[in-house]
Length: 125
Length: 142
Image 1 (tube, rainbow over the protein chains, first blue to last red):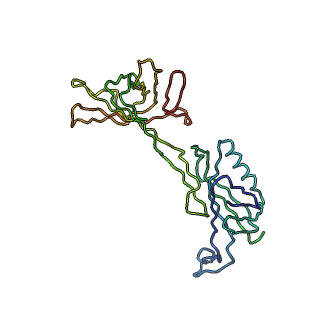
Image 2: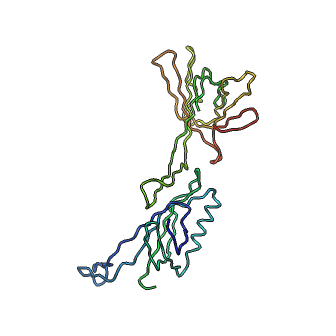
Image 3: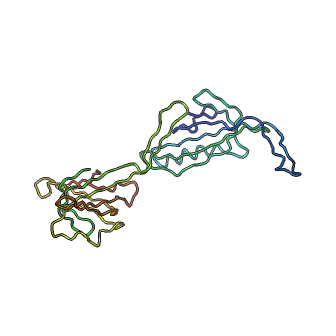
């Protein structure tokens, strides 16, 4: 279960959290003008979380409510949350920047939809 | 559902004689399995798409010409039959299945020759079971 400021926003179904790469953003100089050989570290990579899962509800209307409750958290500028998971990991100052359905609504025993969400800790808030 | 010796079997407007067996099978066409980060076991499993297949086996009479023009793959119709016991004092049990014919084959190495028809059932409404069992005035699913 993934929590945003202690709330199980994605909690109706299974979900998993994956961290993005850590380290330095390395710019290849051949990609900028004037072209040059070599590369340069221009700063740290931003901490990125990728949440994948499936929203599950008994009926389609409840699934729509779940989706709406998540998309209501998206804003411009992005809202910032402390993210925590069941493995005891915690990430502060994570901006909620993306929610993307990754499949159609599936109507079986339950009504469900797979999704992908991204949170990002901006270098410059 | 396994039905032996069904009565009054018809597919569309065609009456099918000497039907020995009708088998209705269900299988998952698409499954969903989900895990979390906290263990090796799936925490959610569902079947949002299922296939209902029907197999009908009938015995051909010695002089019967089995190559009926209406029995070609792709033909759609209502497969209807009564469970054994129709015509007795017991309440008749009728089964209706909207389906599409997907195959016509023959088993001719033994006598009598048998014709095997295969179908896939479908429903106009995705949330309604294509196999309708009518028991007197009550409708149930099988």
